[in-house]
Length: 349
Image (cartoon, rainbow, N blue to C red; front, side, top):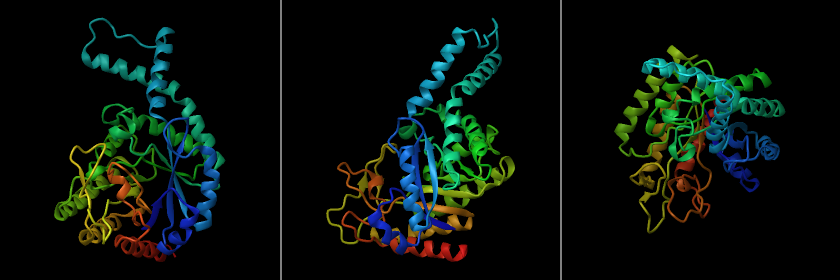
């Protein structure tokens, strides 16, 4: 199992990456002018720095939320005005109405997202010698990140994933398509929806973001890790291609050993209750337990969020997931991640 660190990569941190022993990183890249991620021209320098450290990259191909929402609405209006959409017959049953809607949606989506697929093919072709792993729309199921732009329960995501898969393979048949990472508290409905909607053959890596956010009982966590990874593996065997697991984001907010005036609970944009930080005395066990479970269940890559804590004035939980605190001091989970990273290097050799 290989270990990585979530970008941004900073040149001044190169010695830290080499000492830590990680072999992967993740970038985000916009396909339009929307969400705050890495713009496509900047990928060249990002790949340069990753190559200098010897890191493999997975790139999260994203769009803005308005692109997903507005594009299909605009095309629907155009097709309706042109009389190109099917009308429900008078007296149609609900099932008949739903069937008409489904057929119309296929027409709308095929037209609406062709520019997206073309951009993906262009992007993968441009970087096919530098990157072979492409995630599509990480956190698509998160209401804060996506605003439910993929519909309730992300029902439209599997359809787009099929188009994205074909677009990536058209540019590089050997590239791997990763599902967008999701799975807070190992809630995996997003993946079952993809499999149930026949997108099982349309990805190469089943990518999770298995953050435990509300759960802080280790026994319960261990039970969920074993049960949910086993259940999802069975579903991939039945309805997919038994794809390997990976995680492009994983970690916990943790304290420093000598922190004073610690704020025990941190803000979340999604969880109504605040997120509990892991204390110094507990953090190592949680990191060890999760990583051991991921190794048992065949994860190929686990990318830790993040290298450093970041300054955040309102106590956001994600800003405290670093392996280094705000003063640059190593937290005790540094040694846990370091040991797993070097173990992964030895296995790779």
